[in-house]
Length: 94
Image (cartoon, rainbow, N blue to C red):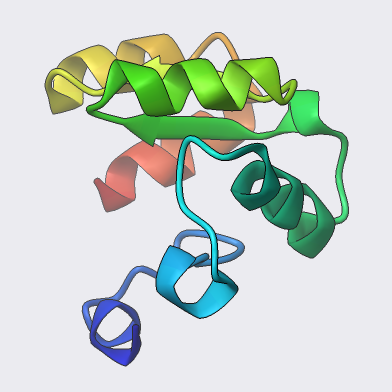
């Protein structure tokens, strides 16, 4: 977990590791933990993952999800969820 932080993943509000939480995707509990840690409504979260089953689990928990295929595609799909002023700053970090 510390390794991910050292890589500079500071563009995210929270880093949630299933090994630390005792649950895994696509179990509903991991998504509920994310909602609780972020203190937001589920619909305000976008999960990006390359596994459709994890995105489906997130959607069943009320979150939004994007199946990762490539960076360009994710950037395009994120525009549906992010405010324009946030997109520019976030995209410059990717």
